[in-house]
Length: 255
Image (cartoon, rainbow, N blue to C red; front, side):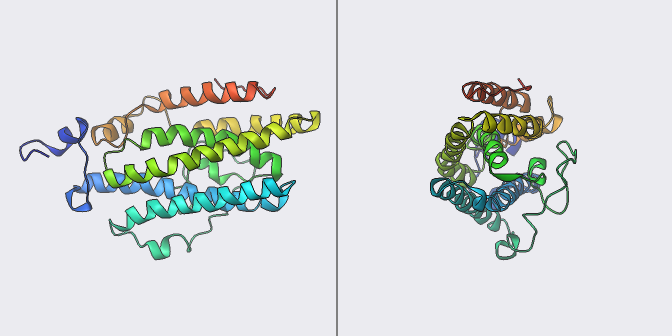
């Protein structure tokens, strides 16, 4: 970085930082907030999905579910290591919180954070059985892949490298969910149950992209922590998920 260039100008022009010592206070705070949201969402998501492993209809499905739980927890750990370099207590972080805690199914919290962590609001809702879990994984899995394409460009290089490393596995999680949903919709009963879960989860996953025309996004963009606006990521997800569901004979009210 040029000694005469303000750091926000440097970051806005595509500059990157490589160590905590180079990060000013505001940047550190926003970067830690971003990482905490990812870590908490991965831990809460894996904890919720773990409860559905025994609902799986066969060995192949149980292995897939267990793999997703294992790898999402691992992904949280990798980002937590980066947080630890900024002073986060990694030893206590993951084990002193009820990650499996959920609100009532009928709760309506929009995108609001709840409780004492920074998980996305969608991970406060409970899963109801295997079909519901697979359907949610398809919808949220596609959202995660889209968000990771954005996060791989984050201006803190060590974190960007982690996101690039975990993207193939998160992409595979979405693929496993789609494979499972294809088997579910082979029967009329399965298709009807899956459609009910689509109707339930679709608006809740959509809310995870945040509000349109966000002033906060503009501030994060100046720091190189965001690039595309929320509405662009949401539109991409709506188009992708509508196409995937249509191929399975499922419909969407979104997009």
